[in-house]
Amino acid sequence: MQWEDIRYFLALARHGSLSAAARALQVDHSTVSRRVTALEETVQRRLFDRLSRGWQLTAEGHTLLPHAERVEQEMLSFSRATLNTVTVGGGVRLSAPSLLIDTFLIPRLAAQRARWSLIDLHLSGETRFTNHFYRETDLTIRLGRPQAASLAARRLAVLGYGLYASPDHSRKPPEDWCFIGADDKLRYAPEQQWLETFSNGRRFALRCDQTSGMLEAAASELGIAVLPHCMARTVSALVPLEGNFDIPSREIWLLIHPDARRIPRIQVMADLLIDLFQHYARLLEEGVPPPDLFSEK
Image (cartoon, rainbow, N blue to C red; front, side, top):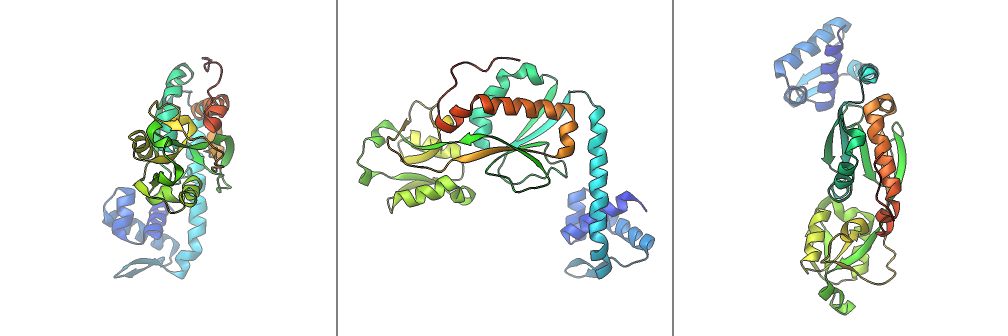
């Protein structure tokens, strides 16, 4: 029995058609068919029904699927274990929300270049879940407590929010306020849900699907936006609105696969991220910078 045959079996089971599995594996669809047929001949079982609408697992295929997934996890674990002998140098993939990458991480990681000078860092600004088991990412920073029990998680800091606007707009009476809100996936964030309630029927002049767009719109005097303190306090064209608004904050978490913690270069970046977020905890939560610069180590 060949591991590659099992890998093709899993891809076809997940994607449901030869063409989709071939795209995922970056091979020709005939290769997928040949590999799966070879596995069926090896186990002497028909694993898929070939239907016009796609390939569907048979009862035997469903029985073997969890065993194949365990084989896959062992192969991926073996692959990660081989990296333990690698030096601190090499590539590390970090996935994080774009607002943290652009306004917080990049300038502070640049200031700490001496601590990761041999590492090639790949940053991905996204909010979707990235799969640590399939090596889409090595480290993940997410807003909100993670649900993935199989990953090691550490709470880094709290991200605080405030209401920000241009000075002219901030002086308007509350009944004349208009707002800048989120669209698409960001609309369901806790701080945006709070803003929908707080607006109480008042007008939204603009909606964006990026926090950076909401910041630019507020600085351009289009209205009031809910923004992270650490992001808005760096823009001279914005001022915080006075008042106790009780806007929900967000916890910032670091996720890592347990096996990856033993890889030196990933541990170096994880340690650096922990240090950064701890040092700038008040900046992230309240917009208050630390009294001293984060010294080189």
